[in-house]
Amino acid sequence: MGAPVTFGQFFKKMREKRGLSLRQFCIKNNVDPGNISKLERGLLPPPQSREKLEQYASYLRIRKGGPEWYEFFDLAAADSGKIPADILSDENLMKRLPLVFRTIRGQKISKEKLEELVEVIRKA
Image (cartoon, rainbow, N blue to C red):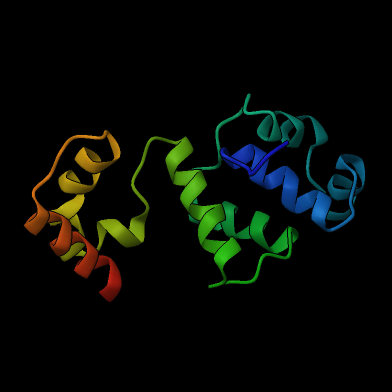
């Protein structure tokens, strides 16, 4: 498997990185193996509650504030069809999201708009 592109793939990668089989992980953390298996395979969506996501992150020993932490939460939001909460709360970034979406879709944007986007990203 290449780089994880879904929440479930990332969850599994982090579990395996800790050297735990699905069964070991579930026994150690008192969670249902059927649900975790479905989560990892993308048959169940990521949890919606921040508390549950933080709980899973702690089980996976993902350090709060580290790159894996942000990837974990960003993938959970993306798989749920949502924009991550920290981005939603930033008014400056929210104003520029349409530009980001157009860029991702491959639509042409002006050089000025592109430079504006780069500046916003640098400041983030």
